[in-house]
Length: 497
Image (cartoon, rainbow, N blue to C red):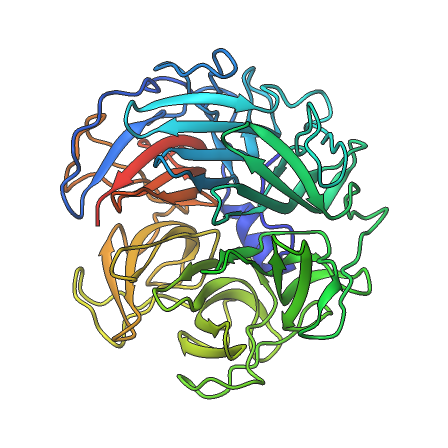
């Protein structure tokens, strides 16, 4: 079982299946080492396996004792997990599709904490095995109240936020509901990292699937209350300066119960516990309305998509890039369009990238010269990339599954920086094209030692964090190890911009 985006056009699915390999796994080299201080613009391999050579398809998890940190602990290889950073700069990881403690592949619901000071992982909650049916059912407890043993079900491609009180939030994904049914989830959860408690806050305990659906419920645009986003995976999220949660798109179920690419933008208030439908369509597969490049307009809106990435700038504006979805003509493909949303005016601006995909179902990248910003530079269309925002409010983008500079599909490992002031992209590191087998092998160097030659391998659906020192962190995903073998990865990297 390989975990891919849930909504894929038939032509792109053919490409995905032709390029995906049967990975293998090993937990060799998984013991963390003491980290040295990274040099600016260099990658450091911090923990996890650099080569994956067992029959499981990914690195097996080493859980140790629940609640106890240990140098030998390590989450199993996975894709489509979610992450948070707490106020002590510890990194948190939840779920995804990957490998449990005994080498079984399925939907995980394990919660991990990584101390960037000690370089040790702690298994905090959830199961260390996925069970015979390939996933762990959720236990919801009482809506809005802490319930002993409450925990979300195993899932991948959900979304996460951290609120102003330091609590973690989790929404949806593809996984298992309260009854053990598999499908697109619409449940909203809050986790208190101090109390180590999960609380089910909103949404259905059932999953939308072929046999049943939990459609989205949309009140009047701009009116709080009465809106409930439908089950979905591959959405993107933000949290604004007021602590409100924002959710956009994904592959899931619209107001009619139809499954497809969504482009609805909804806002959730943790204070009132109400959703507001802010923009976009209540039905799936909506075309993008681009308007004029660089000009905000009430009628502008990105097309339906899943697997995009998001940022927030210093002015509180929300940014969106790419994903697999619908362009301005209604064609589904790998997008490279960049959008900005102003929460005050409720308007989208098309900032860069193409407004339609090419005949091969995507948009090739224009890399320019390594390290040099240019107005003509543009990352390739892709899905499942990761993102960071640095202290200067620049936007950073890494990897994903898509096209390189020559239009060949595969797992990318290119790192990009976007300056919102100049509206220019800079290709910072990594390869500008994939290899013959659809990926780029990682160069790991020495554990804990930064080097200009180090670079993670190509991958999609990894997870990312930014710590209090401004360092970027990258974990796992479905991609290439040091030998070029495709597998569920569990390597942890640090990058200092």
